[in-house]
Length: 95
Image (cartoon, rainbow, N blue to C red):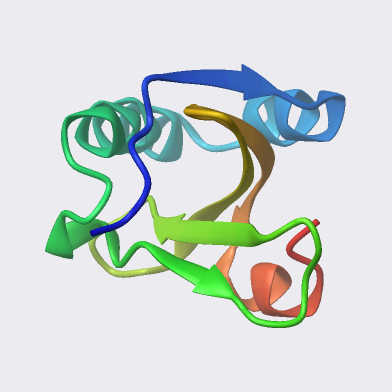
């Protein structure tokens, strides 16, 4: 079983990326964050840890087509959101 997420905190980078995201991504993000607090292991989110990062970095899909993703670190049960970006950009720099 994966970690339990009870809340969110936001880095400045995440806030900037959110402000520049298309409206449909913002809407999908709201739904994905709700799913993450309800069940971080929800199959639709494709929630998983990334290898080679300390502290551990996780990511999940925002859009059903996997085009946008969110990365985060855990601080207890709070997900500190690091990035909101395209899948391609996430693969390059998840932090």
